[in-house]
Length: 192
Length: 192
DNA sequence: CAAGTAAACTAACGCTTGTTAGTTTTTTTA
DNA sequence: TAAAAAAACTAACAAGCGTTAGTTTACTTG
Image (cartoon, each protein chain N blue to C red):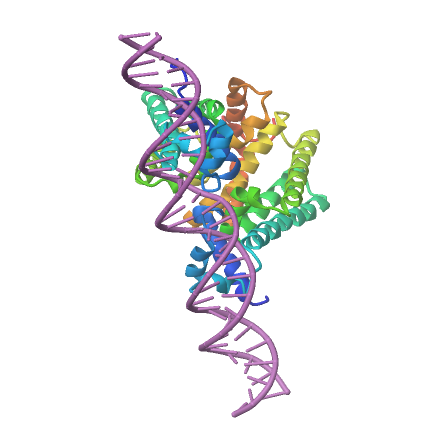
């Protein structure tokens, strides 16, 4: 575990402010105040406001990409892969709810890295869809509208950053498990 | 059907830009350009940038509130009430995906109306939770973690604004129905 | 403890922001 | 068609923006 540099601290603090007000509404003076310094001093550690956003978003996006690739390698059932993906989202989001807000809401303010981000995101959705499609093919998942399923599950997972901070009584393991139950089996009481 | 005033047109155009870049990143000059006029001219129709945001968000929030109250009045089963709520979200969002982006992501930039908005939102979640709780009590809904169910469903419904514009092949009725299926029954293939 | 480096500071830059004042043009009304 | 109203315009404002240059202070190291 490498210890946090001043740059890391700035990025972490920025992510927190970006979650509260969005990238554009947070000024370098806001960030400096929160760090207990003057705005110009930030530039001893970072090159630009844009760089901060890039660091927050791209590192998270790559973490999701490599996480999903790892899951795909296994030879588990597709339902179990789906459970692993849910766990992946819960784990990454639990560690960095602030950063996830930027990933979800501030990606459009990326400049040089925008295209790269969109590529990662698009690939991620394709891989995710693939799990569902294979699940249908193998009779693990109902033969319904794949896009509706994908959208529904992914929307929930992408919103975790808003909800995890409010429910600290649930640890990541419990949360993953309960979330898997609801997302996979629904809420309907079976008649049996 | 009252015809659209110039003010309405400005608000609608602003909502579109707010969705693309967020409230703070959209300037009055951006909005004016999109409207084919100069920034100062906007002020013949609106009082401030803040007023535009207020109009977008509060009208939608009140539409949700009154819609849910109407649903609560009926004596349908709670599962059927839930289906109606899903339909409510699909209908309101279909009519105004741009405005829904502001509702979801730019509410924190409200000033005078912030507290009012938060009250509406909080009440809405309480009413929604109530439907689920009654459903559990009446043996319609599984006796699981209510908060996880609430979060999962509401996250999906609140993300509809991102997804509806990309899937124009699905009309609101079909979408509501398929969404209800997935959110209520899950995606798991029943073994029978 | 001297030298070097890291990290803070002050001051300022050129540019953009939301908004106002005053004027001109266009459209509606009588 | 003249008067009134609506809706555009130009010009400018004070404040705030990200960032740079140059300097001072605080820590680290030989």
